[in-house]
Picture (cartoon, rainbow over the protein chains, first blue to last red):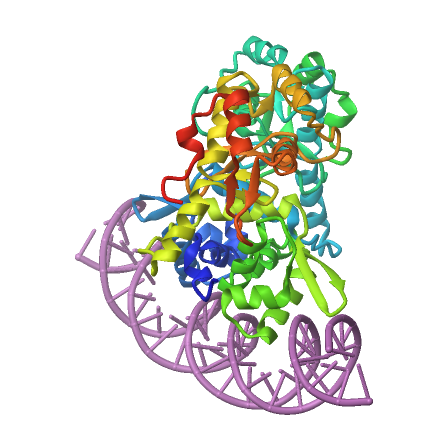
Length: 241
Length: 241
DNA sequence: CAGTCGTTTCGGCCGCCGCCGAAGCGTCGT
DNA sequence: ACGACGCTTCGGCGGCGGCCGAAACGACTG
């Protein structure tokens, strides 16, 4: 019935998978999951490889359509090509083995705690805080989980009060669950998740910690999230700063 | 700030990706996307490799948690480990380059047409028919696309009339968009998509074409889909049988 | 204009991994 | 009990691909 032709029939899965099958390239994508653009040298340093090696990897990733590049002067900035790529990386991370191992240094442990507490996941919020926001929205009837992941009318109004406008139409699902790799529970992604995260930055609810993916909930953010979603202060403040 | 430790920090993406980075293993997963269990020899023949080679690949895939195995007598049946794996494979396929190339033989072209018309995608319906069903459900207010992918109250009732019960609770989203790799448009997946597909088989609306993923819409199916969703007969019948 | 720095190209080394065939083992049918 | 069949193990071959360092290029800096 079917000989070797099964190979040529469908889409070339392996070609895409191969791009992520290398520890260094996967590390690049994981780093870029913060949604920002990095330079080639930054990525090389981040993963501890030679600049020449990074160049080759970036060529492969850009050529394969996973990354988009933008050249400015002598710098080459790269970022994830789009939300679909981010979702792929997330899916992969959710299935990947927990590569635990005790943190090598104290500062590494601190960094891990900061990430576990609150961070960006491509263009939305994740970590303890991200999951707590999602849970609170479900509890208040703003999000619907039982019949698919959707935004209720009340949720739509709630966003309107915040001044958050969600780009309607478009291929991207407004609401999408994204499995949190520290909490192991879904948090809010999709167009709404992105818009909400953007608002949180704009309104000064959260701010970046250095140049990492970790974010800090500001005093204003604590007040807003407590007032609007009833989150407890205990959740919003990291135990050890 | 961060040295080579970036490698050991996050989840080991590359380990999972490496499993799918081989043409043969990817072909196995693509074949298993029909949701059924295959024997090792079937897969080996399907991809045109030696049995010993297939064994090694299957060990890797099972060991990596992508496949589940069930042994019966001298047969070893394997299937995708779960919906998360199916989603990963789908995401990958959606991003993968269209490996077109003119079909080698006439029968191959026929098979491709059959697949493009109607097929199973893991545990739900895809192809022209799958997309048409999804579109019709949206048009009739049974599915909600604008504010996230969700089932409306009317949709819930509609399923009830059919006698379809959707397993509530559970981690799996009830409704999920799955990008169709022939139509390039989303169709209905998730728990509801699976339940609806199961019903279509049970009620005799559709039946498998040989041992492929392709399905045929029966006369009863045409009648039911026309009556309940207003699908046109033209869509439901393949041009060249 | 010279120096610095980010990026790129090239050559070469090394290890990993997919492939096969042959042989062995367990299960099923006769 | 015997052969047929499906799966597995093993050894060996070959190729792909990631890594580096050296050298070149081009853009910015002073």
